[in-house]
Length: 304
Image (cartoon, rainbow, N blue to C red; front, side, top):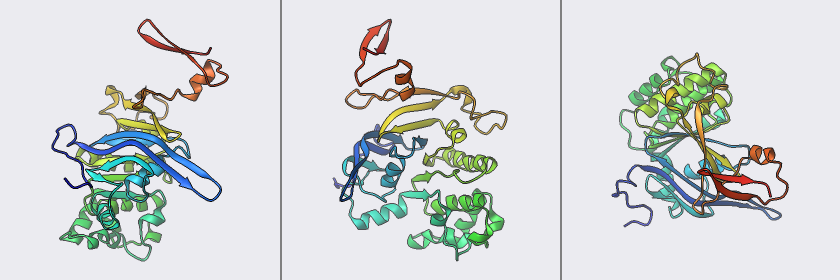
């Protein structure tokens, strides 16, 4: 078998889009060494819409960049759609970025070329592939993001929200298997954020696998699966409660205020977990030692 792929004949592996095991990323300068990822484990299945959340510096954007083929891991394992991102050559990496992943940046200036029209920007990635009927497909994508009338508009003629919607169309130009979005609603108003999330929801219903990095509380509370990264590792996951699963487009729900998800602390492969800081503060812990025991079918953690 090719060393750049994994065996997907097993039914349990055939639906895995992203598989990260013990992923480590170290950035080095002459004076310092920064450990951005510290043994991160994560599986994303084909067809999932997953959000990554975490404080600045937690490692979420580093992880997204590695999945996008923009940065190389330092250690561990990382497979995307069967591609081994550790062993890919530069030529293979170019093809991977062209055909397997689509990227929507928070900074609109990275999504569009200002001297091209919207439709020309969407057609640009297609020129690097064997896509046929490029103009027809670009028009379809403009319809998808609700901006067919903006096809001849350049970047300075579009609002921030319109630019971000065009960016989604550009990212979809080569029909990627995985769509990555870094803070896609970070610089738009609430109404536009809802519209953008609606686009992602419709794409996901059609089978598109999507991974979003976001600080948007309302958006993250609508997603079926939310993965929290803390200090370079997966610390917890939140899963949308069943009663909210079919109501993500309802404007009557205060998505920031309502408790829409169940949260689970994640055990790593060595059965370690990260206890949320607020719980540590509640028990008044001083130092780095805790007592652990079993009582009434519960694991109890307490200060010494």
